[in-house]
Length: 585
Image (tube, rainbow, N blue to C red; front, side):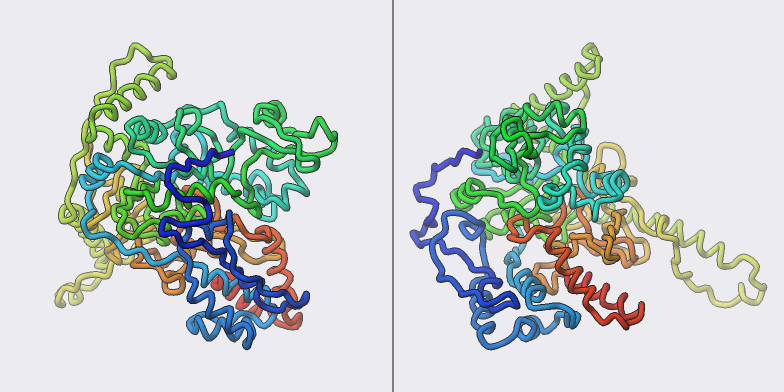
């Protein structure tokens, strides 16, 4: 259990201004559904839940709630969001209310602060800030040997192959599915069970910030307990961890080590007390609440932050993904990730391998941070059986300015143009060659059209590709030679459930179209290619982890609604409804 740090002088039901914090009713509680009427409860103080700390659009919520007294959910959807496509006729009130709730329940627009742009600015922010909120995802643990979720070799891609009977790979972490069939989880859990991994440079950097009295809190989405192993004490394990476990039948509590033997044997852990219950690690599955402690701590921390740093997270999973939007808009924010995020506007974007970027920040900061790098290198050498090896000679990276970056890209484009021109003139008649020359259109296959930016980096350098974006080794950013812009290309798997429609949950949350979501300028321009979409590679799928209905249950209900469409419709109609479903979510 998280120990609540109550340093701020106010309680869990009040904000610093003294105003009471109220719970926001869900739209599901304000209308009559087909299952019968549901009275709208009065607003009242709440000791838990993300309404304690997040910024909500109460005006729009109140407007929608009032309208639902006179109009149907579909009418309210059309009136409040006229740009939305009309849902299929088979959608009932509950499904439409889910869409309406998602649209209303979006984080506020975050505007970039103009004073913070460069890598040097980021270093200076780390140097001077005293209340840093670090939000970490799976990207900080990749170098430890723990796979992330969304990369082409990540957890979900592998689960799709290793466990084809899963409705989709996200079901591995769905509480409803786990209760029915825990075997796939225990088959897989061995790969991520704690005690097998060495903390990364990123973990040690956060510990160094804490020792330097600069860390307000580390909110981690990871369940690997590497923060504990590193010695970080000001940590909130947002999604729980393997450190404890609980019987789902009788509630018996166990230390995490009690299920280690079963996990390593890929065997479902059974309760020794009731003899029949399944022991589940105390990690938060989809469909489960994060709990009281997380929300209280965030409510206490949000007004004391002087720097937000998001490391190795795609900000896909609510409510943790809302943390950057809960602090004051005047607080600078830094993103350290392999790619930009379409659902989040940071002041400074440092794109590449998290550990490489953190290492370069440490070299710039010097002092205990330089010592951290030296000790980490020595530790890795010792672990690899090469303790007598000379210390790694770390070199500070040089910045390649925006103009030079685009010149390098232009040189590559000109080479491709020459090749395209040579190919197009082969076999032409002499009179054709005598005509006025025209610049050939650059028409390249995808592999040649999109240039991996980090592959063009000179040694000991990083690119500055825009005002506030720097690209380091390991970045997933590409340059589109045709459109002349930076793009994100993801090799993700489009999972399809047994009913035949796409269930890639990314489309149902914060990564959706900003014209609907109300976000600020896109962080990245995307490729217009059917399998290349805006995705972030370092976290679990886009689901509201606090949802009262599990993700799997939602999929079942929506699938049932979809299947109730006219049986006489042809395949073209079914495909159209499929596309509408995907677009809506």
